[in-house]
Length: 188
Length: 300
Image 1 (cartoon, rainbow over the protein chains, first blue to last red):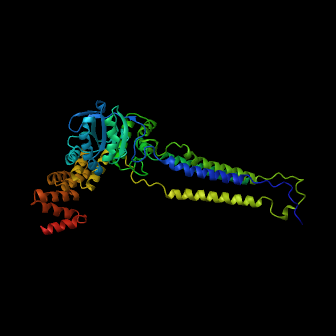
Image 2: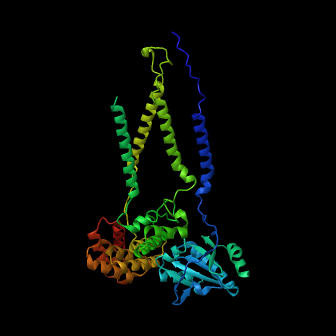
Image 3: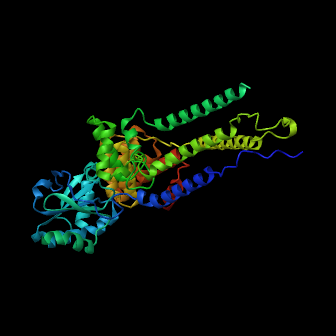
């Protein structure tokens, strides 16, 4: 017995190709979009984006004086976040102190934010690295550094004459970085 | 048959309930009672890979825990604290940043897939309205009813899907996050951790300083013993001896106390050292340092 032929006309299937097309489109979008979406805004070592007003920074210094960021208005300020327990900090300190000394007539000031450290240990470090004259602001519990958005030590911020953070270096600074990022601010 | 829809509904309800329970469990997390921990657990440590601020041992994470504790103590709400951190570290500091753009797709695609599959299943499984003029009296026993293969395919794939979900759920239970010690942000523990790091770098002076700071907050014999060891290694035998004496005044038979005191006495009062070290050997013959001390005594 022969089966009766279906009378209903066989429709061209729409769903499978549509689902396939959507899947491929989504796959392409995800593949292309995810890498750019997952990068952090600050990058890992690079600069900060637009200049932002520097958070307040004031308090007694290691040598018994007092430091206030507001008083440094009109100066270009290098804020170096460091600790005696951090080897790279030890390596970069002489370079920073040298830059601070050289460029001080042009209006550069250098201040160290000493994170989670003991005062004896940091004094020893300053003596060893020839940085005994450095203005050091102790930050025993590290909360000031967190207020500045520090991600690790060392980290160095460049604050311009108007008190805005215009640059930051995560990790060790180099002579080249200082020449490129700090020197132009002093010339102006 | 009435039991089929009933069974289907039952399975669906069970799956939904299990999903809701799992979601509630993972959302609840740990540290409901500790607001500092509950905030820090949802912050990503910026100096580490894949660790939360609550779990990381890095000094910056410790500082961030302190910053959270300060703000919580000042009465700031969880959202205020999180916003404060986002302003400084960007949205990536949140362990669960608000979904946006492409990330929303990760949620939308499975949902859309499920909806599409459900719709397709409904279309296939819905009994076709029998049209009398369509089929001229074909005996139903002649072969499988039209759509029977599709129904079977759907049923098997649904069964497969449920099996996959259940096995993943069962396997995930085995992979439950281990929680070794949910240590709260404790300044003393942080100081001790920092001191240990310093010791690892052979900087015993600085380590001793950290131990002293920790002791100021919490006079504890374990920390005092670590201080004594650090002082001994830093070459301060007198200080090490004093710290060890203090421990021994609380616990006269503390093996580590006797050990450090004995070693310190070798430099300060060599005549008393052998007696102290012999007492150490009597108290703790199995101590890892015992063979070395035996050798020292034999050589003397």
